[in-house]
Length: 241
Image (cartoon, rainbow, N blue to C red; front, side, top):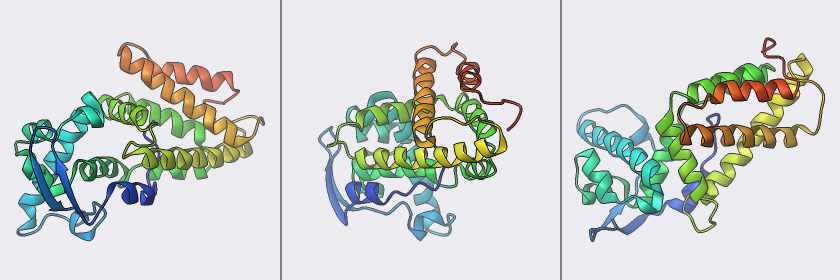
């Protein structure tokens, strides 16, 4: 479940970033480069003057990495393959992102920027059910994205994985968003009273992740319908927001 945006990446940046990084692509290409911070003003502002070509290349590389990491995982995907898909050399990938870990952070942060604001607003108004149903339907059209997060999230259960802190923090944030939304939804009558909201949040997240895995294995599986059935089973009012 790619969650609401505004997820803090402090721990991820600390574990993935460095002032300088020497990296090997996995195909014999080694290079040293300054690691750009994906959150920096230089990367966030629109392309302008001499930065335009560089930003276009960065976008192409991030898009390619998203596909490669989704198909092969972070450890299985090489920078050489990322470069080939983006139309650049592996050394050029290192030039832009400093290391494979730096590229991974850029891929993860590209998803976070500006995503989920409307969903968080719905949660705050007690419209948790409406927001989650919309999210599941949106995710049904984002197969590559869901596969990326499923692949990386599974790999990142290893504490040594470079995205371990990122996903650990991310899940904690999602549970917090959901717990607050559950409490508000109970206030509005969209959800009935029940167990501790934090525990319900964890179970909702587990259901959504599990349905996504089944859908990735069988594209004909209707995870939106299955999720609606789960909501009804816990007493949610589908017509109440």
